[in-house]
Length: 101
Image 1 (spheres, rainbow, N blue to C red):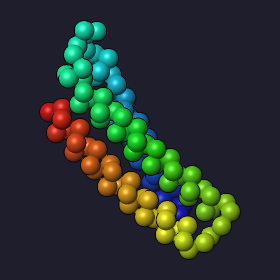
Image 2: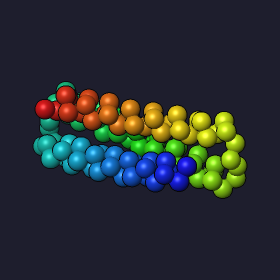
Image 3: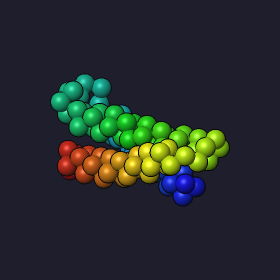
């Protein structure tokens, strides 16, 4: 569980870097840029915020499991959520690259 906690925190940090890149890209466009031009970057940034939320949820549940309980059902939920986080990271990266490159 400690490994999932650390890996989820690391993944969350990587996602925040990703959000920063997308936000700085959006900020680099002039003020009159059309919404259609910025849409892929904004969609990617909001999707990254969602993935970051999954990371935070995984971290919170891992800490809860370590601090309060060691129930099997919570353990299975956390491990499953971690795999969802990994898939979400891959989907996010692929979608943003496809939309922006």
